[in-house]
Length: 294
Image (cartoon, rainbow, N blue to C red; front, side, top):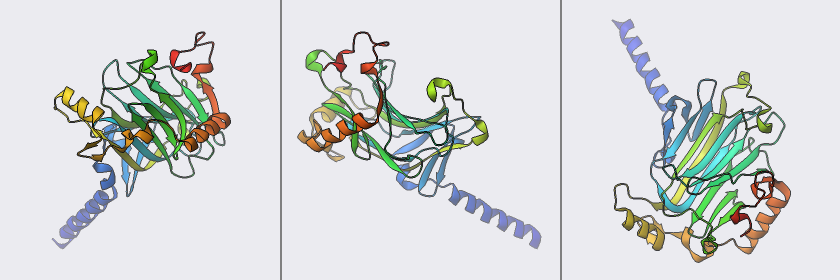
């Protein structure tokens, strides 16, 4: 009987230890939840990890949707040979004619730089890719990647340095993403048909698992009331400057355009690190898209 009791107690101890090791970090719990391949989404103390192996990638989604605001993820990207892999952090609305703002981090062979691809979908149409390299090693430490969205502009930022702006030019007949609440998402998957050197370098599965690590995910935004009347929610998030979340700082006058300092940062980043811009791709677009001329 003593031996049986000892086994039971040992089992309880092991169960508790395993449960604590895999416990969800409370700082993530209120904001996001695993959305697919739940066994590949790993809570490791104060960190969250997304794992890709030759069975599956995985991802998470915000628990709520938002109309305007700022989403931030502090990420340390896949170390070593990450060729063929893509880690994405993005905002998206639902439906075929959706709006979407993408960060896609394109893996590379060891020693070669990561490329950061941004893309914008408006009413279901994308093809607005830009690619940049980075001025640091994104696998060595955590860096903040954020998307600011308000009625006047969409801004992509890396460690608070703007790298891309999509402005509102509706007065010129150019569509701007508005009026559709967005969720916040992140995922890792295999994209070796295009991600690294146009698909010429494939994923080396002998280096799996590939892991991207998250230190924090924050969302400051006007939380869309699920099940609430659409017109009322649209008015609340579009016209108000205060709500249950507090002051809607992302809609203040100073957030409608970059500051002088931010404009200089943007020019520097694009001059030094931009490697592809769809606006300059005359093969794909003999006539530049309208927003490129705005």
